[in-house]
Length: 279
Image (cartoon, rainbow, N blue to C red):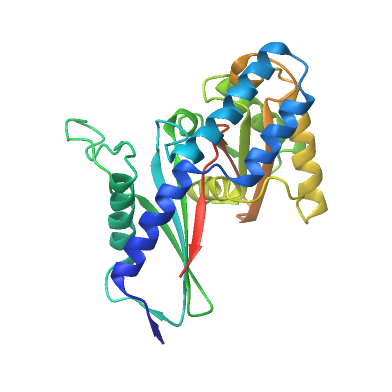
């Protein structure tokens, strides 16, 4: 059994909280540059140029890519041969708060969601924990801004719903979001499980590399069809039209009940930020 200290977990979480907010993922930046190279609309080119420049300046000056540093969602994979003395969810929240303070990142957490009278805070974050084999801990921080989080949708379809109905719901969710969540988008889709689990799948789908083709042919074909339909919406970068409304659609599935078909859509803005570390 390997013991991992609480301080190490907090400090490493703080480290990647800053990294996630200041360094745009390389796969996202690659597709943004590709879209810029292929774009012909002058307005869309200006928008994409500003997005790429913003990412470059943020990295160089260690500034937040976006002022909305999100409600941090943290995914933890903890090995079954790891011992942590303290509550790991609390350690993660403490690490996030530490990193946000050190990085000069915005406090956005409203502790009382009803009265909304409490002082804005850095914590708590939201942590999802999975137990895996091994003696290590993998921590992934996803700072999810609420301009895009507010556009998420979940629908409980009838189990008899056709693939066309599923695709229609997903495309309509993006159409409803319009330009309100800072496109070009990355779309995470979760199909199956329960209502809450489909939502989690959709968010986890945003962590998948967006330059890699899905290994499951059925899902790869679905992702391509959805991307083509979404880009035909002509919303474009920042709503200025053009070829690219979305950079990628990632789909995750899970077994579900015979009587149900949950489908969830989680939209990310162009600044899809995440970072991981293995301890």
